[in-house]
Image (cartoon, rainbow, N blue to C red; front, side, top):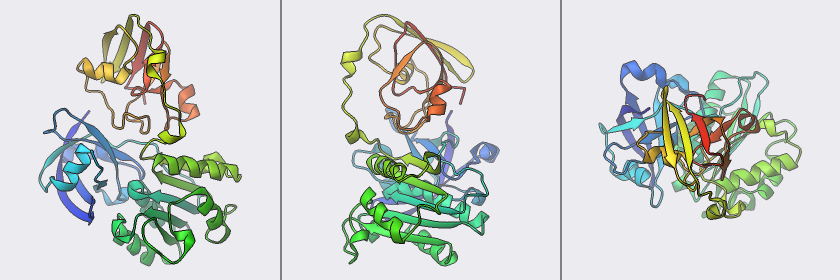
Length: 353
């Protein structure tokens, strides 16, 4: 469900990114409480056709501020609007905060190493602020990749955190298009660089938690590398801002199409809807939207979990899944933006999260 929100302020951070603060009606505030690492799904009422996009909250929850960082993407209608046309007082629509990129509530997590690239800093900086302000013993090392210093989102905020927590926070910038004089700090963040950094900038043995957020290929490569070096998967938290499509063979959708009658039962907002289809070439989410349902979604690429629903009966095939855990899959959760019906009757429940 979407709720109206007002843009309170827009601050230009770089030539192609802005920091936006939003507010909802006072009676909605309880439903917009969030945890560091979560995101908002946003919709622009004036856009037709309507599009949804997710943006991570970049402020510590204790500040009680709905703040997002938006980087303009080529061809991105919503990001272009927010970065170049939106102004204070404009009305947008938001879904309540969601997301599972969350630091476990454990007193044993003291040493954290984070890797971020580009706008991948947005959930990471909220986590950094939260941990450093709430745990005086926590130590965080951030490796942050950008083209150059001028393209670095939240650069001043990170500098302020470095000064505020001199002995507990270090931000190491890596630039792909700016010379630094140090080979290890030039280019993109890669497994090879992480391997070298672990020899003198952080210790694999003493790190309690790893945070990785950015392009899908970087996230996938770093996670695989850390696991290969002996890091437990449970110590690695990831959030993809794009899917690692280059690592996956193209899926031939037509080769898996079944031309027969299907009945899709959808439970949404405590109501049951039935949708008929004569082929399974369309995913469940698209079938629902075409039938007039305002179903939740954002990325449509299997990266976020906004469209998540529980499979109550029947079988489906998911094209991609970059976010659901093995545990969630065993519980029957699916990404409806990636799920095709395989049995004549399929029932999904969006109300079960």
